[in-house]
Amino acid sequence: MSAKEVLQHPFLEELYDPESDEDIIEADEINYVDFEFECYSLSKDILRDLILDEVILSNSKEARKTYKKLQQ
Image (cartoon, rainbow, N blue to C red):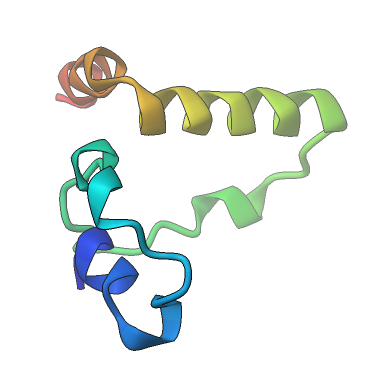
């Protein structure tokens, strides 16, 4: 399901605001699950930095473009 489809589900009816549809960011479908992170111990500082990275990627199209280029 896409983010929009999830938000339109009857279970979330009270939370869904159709006027906010343009704010929904649809990401590429994930075709794999990466559990590499489970192989490492993370300090509080590293975990904080990783969370901030995810927030930036979730809210910036430019950051996602840069991230995809770096992955290639």
